[in-house]
Image (cartoon, rainbow, N blue to C red):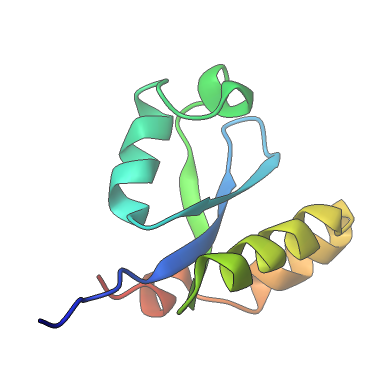
Length: 94
């Protein structure tokens, strides 16, 4: 019996007020829909619509959660540099 492991993702959203939100998920499209519907994190509920601006994929949950923590520790300028250097559309291939 083979088990397929879901990839784990760290994602960054740009909220409608220009702030960034960083999160972890195994399904980026579903999670972005949840944020837009006001069913995501408390932080994003009053800041919709959100835009996916950065995605990174990891093989393990622990690696993704460690990276999520690293990104959350960045300053706004650091997050802006991360977002500018990535293309969320190309980085995310479901």
